[in-house]
Every structure is written in C-alpha cells, then in structure tokens.
Image (cartoon, rainbow, N blue to C red; front, side, top):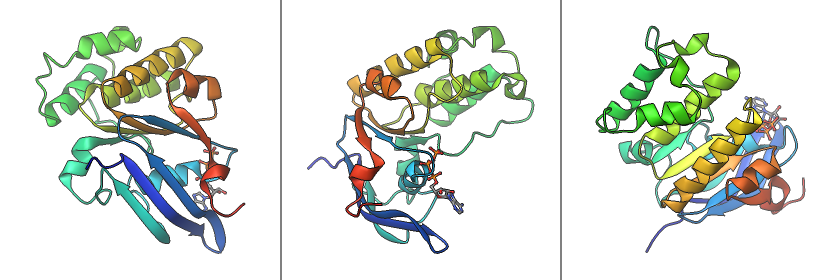
Length: 214
Ligand SMILES: Nc1ncnc2c1ncn2[C@@H]1O[C@H](COP(=O)(O)OP(=O)(O)OP(=O)(O)O)[C@@H](O)[C@H]1O
C-alpha cells in the first residue's frame, strides 16, 4: 500500500505553558501539494519543524512516507526541508554549493542541470560569487535552486515566496508545479495565496487542521 507523503495525527505542541498546536491533524497524499496558511504566530513553522523532525511534539503522531521523520538516512535522501535557514560553506561559490549538493546525492554535477537551474533562478551572473555576497532574495533563490536540483520525494518549504520578486515567485511556482507533476510531494506554509495556488497546492488554513478551535 502506498503511504501518504505526510500523515499528522493529534499533534500537540506547547512552548512553556502556551499551547500552539492543539490536536492538529493533516494528510499530504503522495504526489500532491498542500499549503498551510494562517496569521503570523499561528504555528505553521512549528508544524513544519515537527514534520521535518527538527522539533519533537509533546504528543501526537507524525509519519513521513509511513516512517518516523528523521530516523533514517533514507528520510534525508527523500526529504528536503528549508525550515531552517541555510548554512553556507566558507569560500565555496554559488556554483560549487550546487555541485556539492548534487555530488552528495549521487548525481554527476556535469549532468545535474546546474547551469540551467542557475540560469532559471537568475543566478547565472553570480555563479562565481560566494553566497554571503548575494542579496537576501538571491540567497533565497539559491536555497530553492539547490533544493530543487537534488533528487527528492518531498519538499517541506516554509514561506518559499519570502523575499522573492514577482518574477521569482512565478518561476518558483512553475517549478513546484513541475515537481509535483513529476511525482513529488509538497508541504509548504505561505502568506501568499496567489503564489500557493499558482504552485498547484491545495490551500488549507491552520485553524481547519485543529480539532479544537484556538
Ligand atoms: N522556540 C520558541 N519558544 C517559545 N515560543 C515560540 C518558539 N517558537 C515559536 N514560538 C511561538 O509559537 C507561536 C507559533 O510560532 P510559529 O513560528 O510556528 O508561527 P507561524 O505561523 O509560522 O508564524 P509566521 O507566519 O510569523 O512565520 C508564536 O506565538 C511564537 O512566538
């Protein structure tokens, strides 16, 4: 039986005595995209951090392709998460970061489409620069370019539209449509409904995921 890409049941997370996620449940069927929306501070990043195994919930169950998140190397081969801000390797250029990630995932950097990806993300002119010298939007473009270059089965993206100009948002939305059309699964949080819809994701509000009204 095919497992859903993500299955969250009865998730509870509190910070101190403040509950943030109360009985939250969510399913992302494999090969589909889901976008969680909702006001600042409602708990979207917390949910994505838990699904990415970067945070342990107080209670509830999370399965990613039927397994425990973060428990195996297979999880990290299948899942790309941009919930944590990226870290750049000192002295490696934009192109070298892309090559490194491709190599780590068993791809021949010469065949991985790096030049095309840098071109598509408007980074071709910055391929020999180091990431800290890029603008905040260019850094976000690089983060997403590298996330999409390497093979994966599930993308977990926290507000991927952040800091992108309108052309950048349209380009990323088109790439996410392609990713899901090619069989990938997508779980993201966004404040931009138009971007999320253009990405082909099903929009769902954070409130609707909780069995208990906040
Ligand atoms: N490490 C933490 N310690 C204490 N409180 C936290 C922590 N992380 C998040 N919170 C609180 O939990 C709530 C949910 O935060 P979270 O970042 O998940 O919301 P969000 O929906 O992603 O917000 P935004 O749209 O602003 O990104 C907020 O009230 C936030 O202040």
